[in-house]
Image (tube, rainbow, N blue to C red):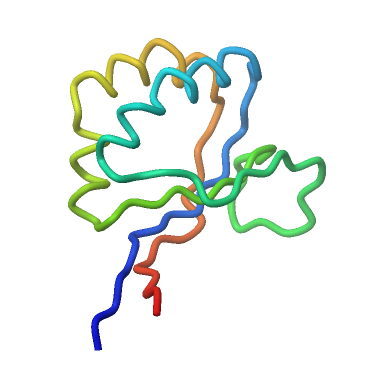
Length: 106
């Protein structure tokens, strides 16, 4: 039986500049798609009831790629790194990786 899968990561952020973060998402979208990635869920969080990190979290999303290698290539891409430095770094106070796994799709 042939199974498809995705490599998925759930991430929590503390976004401190919503407008700049929105520019980041807009600027990186075409590069993300080039590496067969996307967002499956994206939430703005008003209250955290339990957390295993001291980092505050006001945004949670699930990002996926076709496989782990595509994810690694995306984050290593020189164009992506420029966009990240320009928009993500000044707009995000902290990042918390909540989970990472391979999702088998039947």
